[in-house]
Amino acid sequence: MRVQFVNITKERVEKLPIGGLLWDEDLHGFGVRRQRGKPVYFVKVRIDGRQRWLTIGPHGSPWTAASARKEAHRLIGSIHGGSDPATVRDRKRDEPTIGKVLDRYLSEYVAVHNKPSTAAEIKKHVERDLRPEFGASRIGAISRSEIVRWHAGYSDRPYYGNRALAYLRKALSLASKDWELRSDNPALGIRMFPEPKRERFFSDDELGRIGGALSALETESESPGGIRAVRLLALTGMRLGEVLALEWAWLHPAQGCFLLPDEAAKAGARAVALGKPALTYLARLERNSPFICFGSDPRGPLGEAAFYRLWRLARDRAKLENARPHDFRHTVGTYSAQTGANAFQVRDILGHKTLAMTGRYVEKNIDPLRATADAVSRRVEDALSGKTARK
Image (tube, rainbow, N blue to C red; front, side):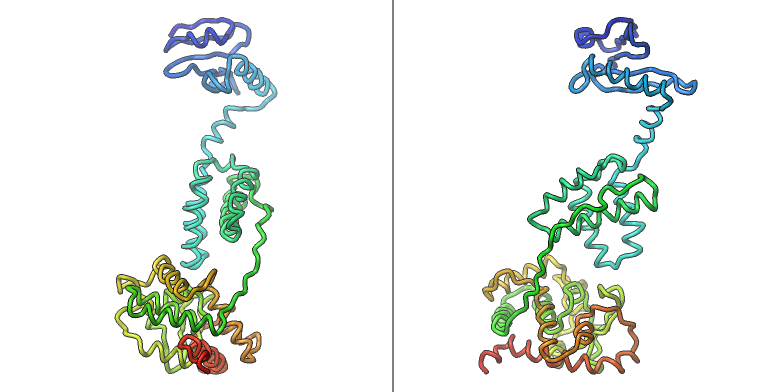
């Protein structure tokens, strides 16, 4: 390799051949070499008796001969002041990426502490929203301003954006507090979007239109599991995830309820009280699958995507705008209150509290809930079948 001590200038750098090396004649340790591609500026120094090569960067924007010399001055000055840029550089090189942190978040925290349905939701946000944006960044490099800018991109979907931010905040909290990968959490304190409360519930007329649409679809649709799911949402007020996971083994007609295991219910194992119309509807259904709301393969449950395809079809047939499956839950809660049920009964009908599940518990406590569920599901059933309108 040919070595020269010269005043490093733009012209000399651009004429440097492959294999060439220039040392600056004025600034000791500052040089430029070209092994392949563009020439690269560097500083060669001794730190604690060890010879270290610190790369500044390739020739071109932002590194010109002048800016590289200025950076070399800074590095050499900081070394003389007692710092070790090489160690800092090596530490940064060894830092895990945000992608690795997210992997650890999913495997060590989410899989252990969250229910399967919640874990699936978190993983969806990680793969769709967090990993593409931040995955390649080093944990020490991600900044608050980056996160604020990214979150602002969800202003048209405030609820969705807030959930994604919450999951990123948790992953970074674990990285800073538990795993000691950085000293702070840059997502902490970032303001969430306001989330307007929506408490829409269906009127008797709207339920009648939905019922008419379902009756027509029962003879046309290739998704009987989807139709079952919509009717059970309406009759029980259960969460969509709970309905899609329903197994026949969880139905106890003599006790008038479903017994949901812990992993199937968002708020923990609970009894779902069933009114007579719900029990009658379930008794009519063919048991051709372990799952009540089965998918295209009867051996498995109906997926959310397939359910929403059916729901959008039923909603459009019923000529309802902005109607969501969750509105059935608000409907059951509203109707329950209108029957005279107290706050505790409404809470238990909707499963807003974890309940210990034993046969003895159900025997003692399911009766008052069944009375409320019976009154509500009778009203819903009448509306779905059009009896309310005829009255």
